[in-house]
Length: 222
Image 1: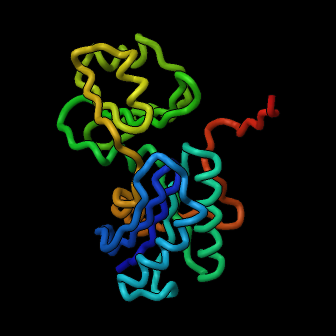
Image 2: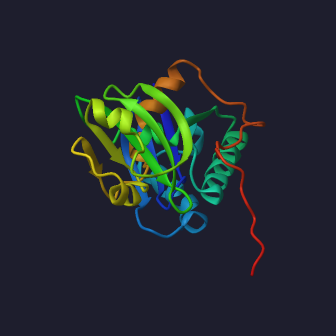
């Protein structure tokens, strides 16, 4: 049996859940378009534990969304998760952000492309089949009207995530399905975290870093 605290901060959605053997028991999230992680994350963790009548030491593990995503959001989530693991002597589990996002899609055909908005016409995207097996690695890519054409010519392609808005403006194909207004959520981390927990697929708390995919760029003010 495993109680796992799940933390998702890779996008503007500050999301925390508690799962038991993969099933979500309680969730708190701020599903909007502004970053509230520094103000709400620890409050949500406290609320989730209190509603479940759990003490921090009752947890079996801490799971965190590893990226890609917002540099600042990932830093806050991962540093919080690592701090809890150090303080409580609990294992750390990392969940690929795009994989958990793909689990929001239910389909029996084609592929799923979870994507997060990056700069300008760029997205962070990966590709999964309808059984959620990854069929192409995560990439940072610039969109154009020919993006993902090989997959679109073969079967249905379901796009989901914050990168969908710019994708709908560029890709006009009858096999394209766009799911709007969806962000990664701790609601979708439970089963993935539990599967890793059972295999003891955990991270080295001291050395684990988020998966930024691209270097963080600091721009000088004009």
